[in-house]
Length: 313
Image 1 (cartoon, one colour):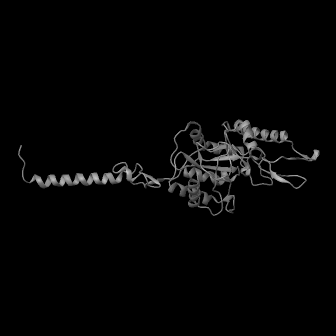
Image 2: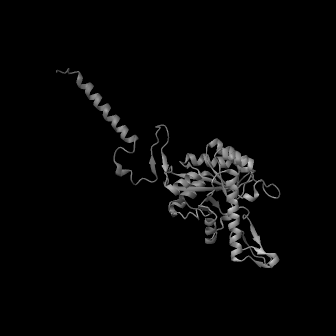
Image 3: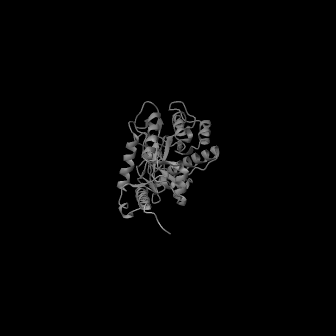
């Protein structure tokens, strides 16, 4: 076979085009090229499937940051934020690369080591205020984000002398949208006082028995707490038809006695308010959470809390 002299420039052009294509490909995909240069990058970067998407930072894997909120209202304080701020948190964390998961997914990870997305976050809302329905739910629906509400079961539907609480009808509707409901005790979200001037959290303090002019005995105290936790769990399960495995401790007050009582009452996991990541190594009866529902907080502040916790672990 003979070749024309004019084929030389054509072959050279093809070779150059092929070389440039291979060079671009190796730059675009981090799996191609010198792997050793990528091992020490911090944070680790991964390419998304779509070339138009930004590269997403991985801050952590096989861990979960659980966020705590309480009330949503335009008048903000240490336990209340506006619906607009709540939306900014979710949208901002999304942009920073966080992935929202449900409590069920967290349970599956802790029980069966099922894979989680990187930068996994869970949203929890304590106390069961009506604002979880009127203000939080529309944001969660619009952003397609799961969440769990921890109910003070003895106060469901309450309106007199306190911030209105969720009703069973509202809870039914929220459950239909995928919102989970768990226990925040039956009626132990309180500070108790006695005639001597002593005070303490109901869940971790012996109550005062006025008619006997004494404090509860150890057995009376343990029986009271066990009954409260059992009743709370039983009512939620019977009324909503879903398993209740999580307990969030009021005020984060906890002790070894409370943890053991929660275990006896049938709970599998207990949340405190101590900041910290949840992992397979975590104590399941003292799981940490980050207080995200504070006045003035933005997504970047929550991000900083999480990164700080990762550095301290």
